[in-house]
Amino acid sequence: MTKILIVDDAEFLRVRISKMLSGDGFDVIQAENGARAVEMYKENSPDLVLMDITMPEMDGLTALKHIRGYDASAKVIMLTALGQESVVLEAIKSGARDFIVKPFEHERVINAIRKLVA
Ligand SMILES: [Mg+2]
Image (tube, rainbow, N blue to C red):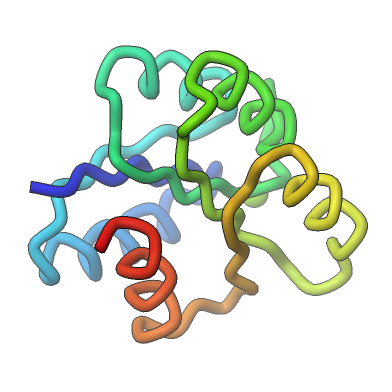
């Protein structure tokens, strides 16, 4: 089963994406900030990470860099808001594979995931 790590400090968002992806047959785990995401990545070796950018303790860009430093083949999709274009560019340079702009549409999320974990 494909394991996906959802990282976002907004619990309602984690729950919503989690329900969406569980319903599609994915195994979902959650982290509430970047620091926790790095820990959970090492503990659980997920197939893919959905990563928010703005979070307390450690932001998504920093967490992305840590995760890619630990596993150069890590697949990370950034969850972004409008107005974060420069961060998205930096994330892509740092190895992020794709980005999804909030609010998410189910189909866009699933398509982005399937492209990377086909
Ligand atoms: Mg956030």
